[in-house]
Length: 525
Image (cartoon, rainbow, N blue to C red; front, side, top):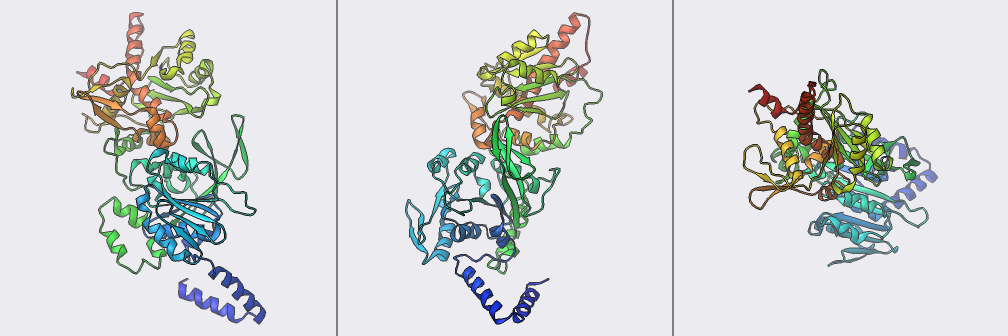
């Protein structure tokens, strides 16, 4: 039904109303028209009326994201904070606020950028350029948070501030609006993770636009739950918050759809064209200049994965990233040659010591596979001792140890074992090697995010340095346990398998173990 027919139908209904009913309708409409912001019909109205605690709105460029963010604050909230990643990008938001809030309060610019509204409310605009800038606003309760171009923010910035979303005003609603086009950099991948039921085509239980889903966040990881209420995890209660995604398009915005803005979007190069013109969250995102593992390499490895890829092979190795207590997760990456099994993950609170890690390993280990345990930071020592005492072939992996190795092309040395291990995994994923990359990784979106988050840089005399786990944690908003376990399983697993074969050969028993690609190729020469 077109908008003209809708209007004619509405006029016909109004014409049939009694004088009293028509007067009541006029009073109700007048109350709405007195509000500072009147949303466009369609997605913008649906977004303003949505009951979601956390709303992602947008997709296509020109869908009215900024107007919604400011309008929601103006119409419905008392203490609001609207953010851009950089304060220098706030001009458009502030200009629109001047249009709709004229006569409703006083704006103080400069370093303040705040509206003091007539009813006592406040609307502040600010930037979060540095990762820790969110701390400037921690401790100040807000009933409304909006993140304009949310894909440019770090996950930690967004979810840390959500912790201060509250109000003591009776009847005051609290909510978050994330206005965003598809993220253009790997750092914005968290947005797809956090709204996977709407944005991830591989998510098993897809959600419709505007449909409410509930989630809790445990140890920095989102867990989708059945509905509202409290959920116990590790002895703690977590209250579920509702989320939804409402897509918006240029055609939904009457102020832009009849201009030449669409033609400008159509002239953009790919993948920017698909991202902004169609709101395609799956369109190619630009890799960071110093990203260690190109996104296409990792996605290709996941595309090669088949559920039965382990058949006919023995388990080669298990990489174990240890979390004994705390918010991180203990993670095991089992590997059958070049095929990685789905990751096995448990909250750190469920693996507080060596025996609990050992029990987790025994539940996964097959074929006498070697076990590599991360002992950096002193957390994995108990697990190594327990496994050795129980006759398991185990080695400790300490990322800070010195490396004397070189890259396959002889160009690079490595600052430490962490750099060597990660670079070896890069070499294994490289599609330009003879025969292409044989690596097959499980289609785990968190594993993908972990691996493409890694940055490197050259230091000293042709040495590779990989950024610290803590630095990656800042961008992801959680620990990259899945990526670390996978890298360990590959880089150290081949060495352990070879050592195990050697020991078995000395005892007259040579097991059939498929190791890494380079070792297989060397054996055929």
